[in-house]
Image (cartoon, rainbow, N blue to C red; front, side, top):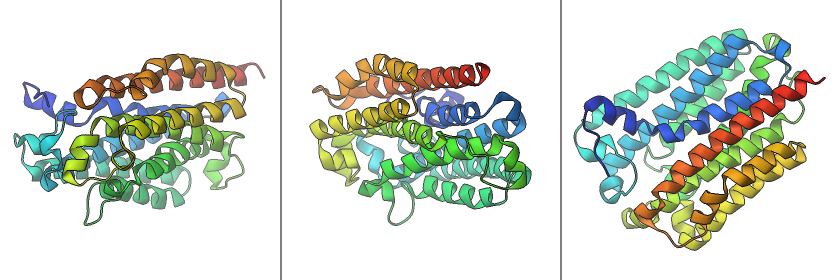
Length: 300
């Protein structure tokens, strides 16, 4: 675990910038699901703030919870504040709460402009972020991380964002949900699952040693690599069913290096490029999807 030289760089590193495409990409896709003239741009910005704040809050919460449990003592991944002991555990916990609070404020404003049921969704998202590694029985330690990532970084992020952009959203109805948004949510969610898997495959040995039973740790290196392939194949299927063939082709091309690495024999630090490559590929697919969806509406 390389230690950044300055305090500000340490906080930035602990926020884990490479995971942020998992939050930004679904929001961009959700916005692009609707006709340009129907987009509420303030709502789009609020959705992005909520998504990024919850992602960063979750990263800090994981840093805190894993650190106080001692899970990160044998970690080979990115820098962690709590485990490094350069920052107090309470400061990291408070940073997580502050990020969640920022997302909550943006979420309340968004709910006031759309529908108050979004508050309940937001609360559940915060709970999911905290209890991934926090609390007495963190679900991330029992192999359920991928399920919650699919729900919140897929369906909730894409469909919720699309809902917030439509004219019907202001009336609090579901009649304006764009066709195909659920399938695109599934595709985006599976890309986010692949990003999580890239992280967990790298940490299999350390997680097993500390008793953290992620799905990758349960499956082992080889089968976890195939799970990564499964996540990408499911994302590909989602784009094919929605007839976004160009996106499917781009997805296959940009994920080739990551797929090779996931299916190889590399372990531990040798897998650090897998997370970087997955994040970059996810961002590229998100940009291309947004462009393709926008071009579709322009051609009508």
